[in-house]
Image 1: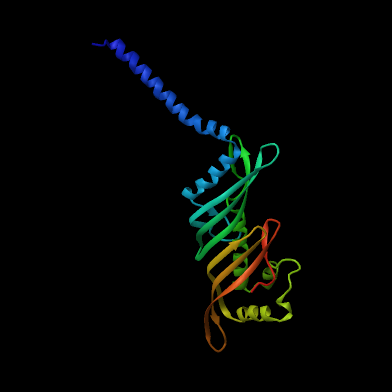
Image 2: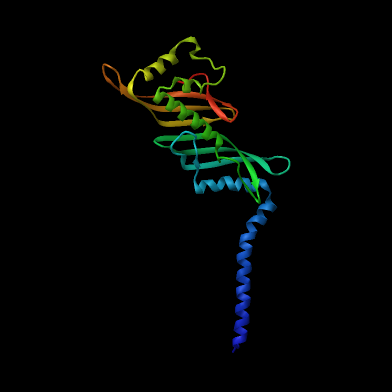
Length: 239
């Protein structure tokens, strides 16, 4: 039979082995990341959001754009000289909500990354182009809802031709602005994002009052946006 001293020695060895395994489990992911390079770390970081979910802050909106489900695919990574910054290009398939508006998007996403300590993480949002398009759409909706023509015009791309000279857009805007107790709501946005432009299909609802009758109209319209720096603006029209 083993003596008490023998069992004590074996117990000490077992504790040392367990401690070594625990320490290795903490160190190995970092060692593997270093061995694999920044490309694998950045791809892993993007793919991890699919399990954790996305919440994208939209300036001016009361609630974030929140994913119900999303998927990054065809990810490529360009690391800048110096190895401290990188850009990930990917295809993003996204479904979610901004407050009461359903959002569905498919297209190109560009995500800047920065190395902080030993980890790579998005410099800002994990889907900045999607957030920029949704921001433009939400600002437009709010401008129509409040009747703020100046704010609406600020969303038009420089040099965009208004109406092609036909006056249809002005008539559509006037149809909204003439209502009392006006409420303009986007029930859904269906988006397609390319590298420098986006197309949005908006399911809208307009409620209000005319002197002669109440109004409760619904419809669908197609909107085009182009990239201007880090934001997207409407071109050619706002309606």
